[in-house]
Image 1 (cartoon, rainbow, N blue to C red):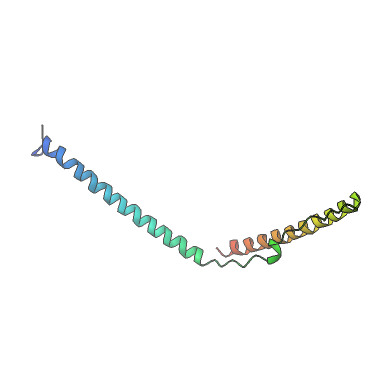
Image 2: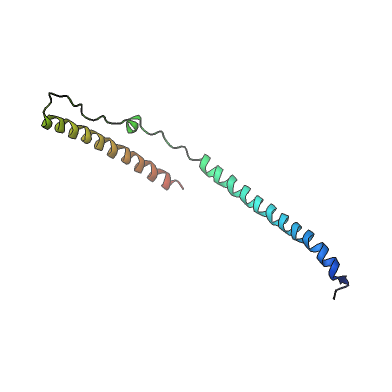
Length: 108
C-alpha cells in the first residue's frame, strides 16, 4: 500500500521514532506541570509558620507508685488523680491545636 507517497516499510521504520518523540514531549509537559505544582505548593507551605507546640503537651504522666504497704484504695485515688492531670493536659493541648488550625484556616 502507498500512503501519500510513503511506503509501508518506511512507515514501519519511522513509527517507533515518532512514538518516542511523542512520549518524550509528553514527559516534558508532565515534568513542567510537576515543577510548577511543586513550586506553588512549596511557596504556600513556606508562608505558614506554625507556632511551637507547648512543652507541656509532650509531658507523659507517670502512674501512681505502688508499694507493698499501700492500701489499694489509696493507689486507685492517686492513679485517678494522675489520669485527671493527663486529661486536663490533653484538653489544653487539643484547644491549642484547634485554635491554631482556626487561625490558619482563616488566613487562606
